[in-house]
Image 1: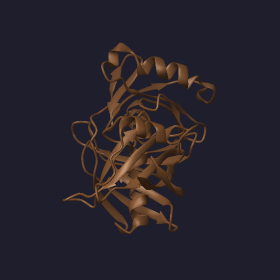
Image 2 (image 1 turned 90 degrees about the vertical axis):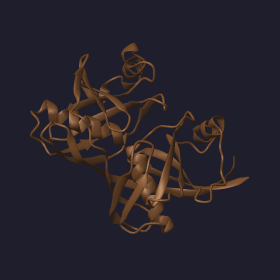
Image 3 (image 1 turned 120 degrees about the vertical axis):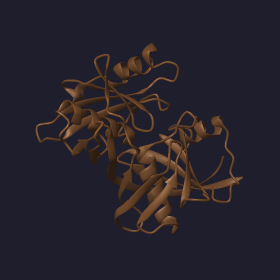
Length: 264
């Protein structure tokens, strides 16, 4: 069966998106991994099905490039919102289901194919000091560590070691390395589980890193500008009286790349 798809990226974090509102496409783990393979397939960090939802605008079913599901992907959520906008499913606001919880997103800017998308994340417990960094769950687990000379840092080797550390058993964790830049931006680089390598950006990782940075700065920050290898983001948030983060929003680009059709 030939399956039409679209390719999007959110600041270099790229995805294959499939309109499955009729629930007629069923791909195996190996098929998804094959589609995401950069040498023999379409090439992507993940694959998403946009499906019908009884109570929301749509349902987001997300798979990492290894073919296994993940509960949430921040950049994926922004890209599927842009996809839904292009399909005419939504206007400027989307409410959708994901594997962790429902989310709301807003189309801040739009040129017909691509735009600036702002997505609401879930309430996040205050990041906890752990080993020589912080641990926080922003829909998926992240270990965040401050480093020096991040531009030359060996993210792959050190990220893989931490991702597989027994302290994060049995499922492992995503790993984010952070450093403050001279212009005030926070530079974030992420080793992403499921991809098993560095991605140009990671939405949940950018969010986790911004919240950790706010804690490290004394807890008074309400927004953090973040730079990644793939592009720039703005993370905004509030805190409740227990120190948990609420009204957490991730804003950044969601860019259409091309449409295609594959006999997968």
